[in-house]
Image 1 (tube, one colour):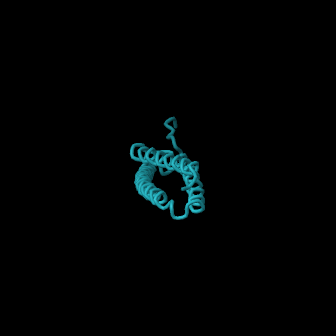
Image 2: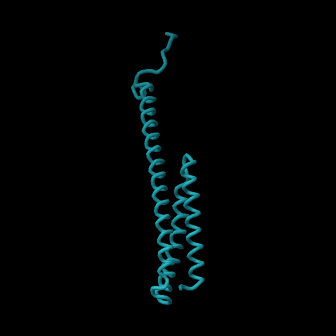
Image 3: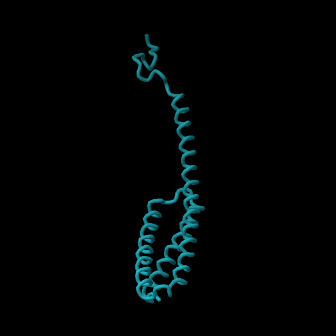
Length: 135
């Protein structure tokens, strides 16, 4: 079996990443404009910690136990699959937000064009803007 410290570190990293995923999925489903930069940074940090913990676990599991740690490895494989499924759901929500933003920007662009149609066409011409009635 791998060392207990590696296993507890790996469990902590898995729990942390899964917690962040559920928080982000909830935010994506409820918020109109989530802070994607902050979410990306949080997910990147949690992913790096999980990756490091997994690498350490795999090195120690292979050296100490050989094939004796296969049940533990398969359990973590299942957790990784569930993480990947949640990542896919988050990706779908990000795509949905992106499409909504594109639609809104297109509507705003059309409105801007329509508003420009009401502008005075002779703004830059040399003709007087005010008629003099005193002559």
